[in-house]
Length: 274
Image 1 (tube, rainbow, N blue to C red):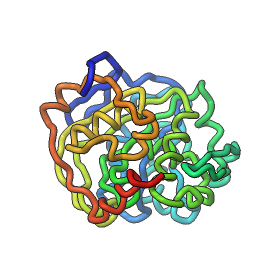
Image 2 (image 1 turned 90 degrees about the horizontal axis):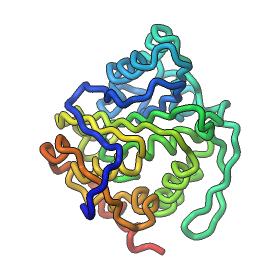
Image 3 (image 1 turned 90 degrees about the vertical axis):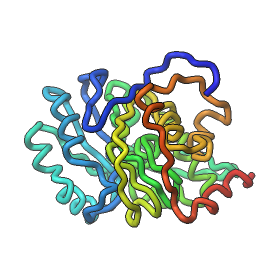
C-alpha cells in the first residue's frame, strides 16, 4: 500500500455509524439504484441512524432520478416518514440543480451540466452513503460516484455516458469541485455479479468511512480484492499516483474478493483507450 501515513479512514462492524460524523447542516446523497425494491438500494435503517445523529441541524436528502421514478423511490425507501420524523427535507435534484458547470472529457470535448448549488456550498457538509455494488457501468459503485452523479440534473446525467473512460473522468472531476465531505460505505452486505439490479447479496459486515471519498473508496476497493485503479474514477482522481494511506485493521481482517459484473472485461477497456 506504499508508505503509511495517517488519513481519516475508519472501519467498523455492520450497522455502526462512526462517532466522527460531524453534527453539521448536511446534504445526504444516496446511491439509489432503482425505484423498485432491490438489495442494492440504501438500507432505511442506515439513513435513519444518520438522521438521528444530525437531529437539530438543517438536513436535506437527495439523489438524482427523473421525477416520476424519484417519487416512487422515495416511497419504497420510506423517506417521507423518516424526513417527517427527523424534520429533514427531501430534495429532488431535477428542478433544483441550477448551478451550471462545464466538464472536459478525456478527448477534450466540453459537456455542460446543472448541479445542486448545495453541493458547491462549503458551509454544507455533504454525506455520501453507498453500499458496495458491482456495477455494469462503473465496475464498483461506491461513494465517489454517489457524490458526483447524484448532484447532477437527471436530464444531464445521460450526457456523461459517452464511454467508460470519459465517464470515469467526469465522476472524478465532479467530486473535485466539491468540499466538506463525509463518506460512508455501508458494507454489511455487498452486491456481487451483474449489479445493481441483477446482482446478488452477500454478507460482508464492514462499515468504512472517511472525510475523502477517493481515499474511502480506494481502501474499500482494496478490501474487496480489487486493484483500486481498475476503478477509473479513482485513477483519474489520484491522477494515476498511488495514494499513501493506512488501511484500518477491521478492513484488513475482513478482506475478501467480490465477484464483478459479467461485462467487467469491456469496462476495463478504458485502460487501453487514449
